[in-house]
Length: 113
Length: 114
Image (cartoon, rainbow over the protein chains, first blue to last red):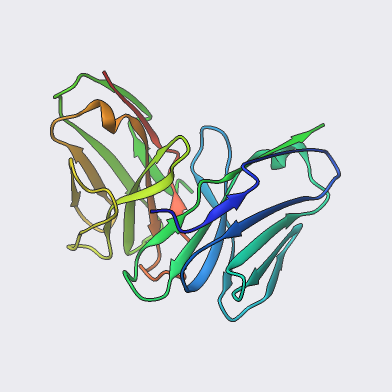
């Protein structure tokens, strides 16, 4: 069963604009991770935010986490055509298997030159 | 820096045939995973290996078997392929198996079952 659900399913923007993707989840988590997947490739880890953190930055990426709303957002600033990819959130749930990440269905981001 | 290498990249099988998907990592990671990715479904965990010598079922293990051959290699076997197993299969690894560990993915095996 899916834990994280990304919103929107697809997003199309112009180069230079900011892109915001959201992830909602249902149960308590230890951490939430964001991954990128370019067409025909594997997933690449972008950033991890722990349940006791509210915001984290990495280059042009900003991730926020609101555990009271069970939601996270990924902001990509000053987007580039190379940012075109699918973006997935993955949650490490409190309790349960210590090894299981649960992935959402992803947001397809298209950045037009 | 190869990371996680999967072979083959593409494969077409007939229903009932068997096949082993290979995965190797060169990062000295302890934990390895097999996922399948289907349109509109996200990634689903098939099996994982927390460390060399151990394997455990994930979310969708039926129809699959795995072998953790050594620390580097983790293979996935389809004994009798079915059309429902048409998917893209990803192998991943992490330093340890903790839920707070980033996972490193291979580029996938695209498998079609006719």
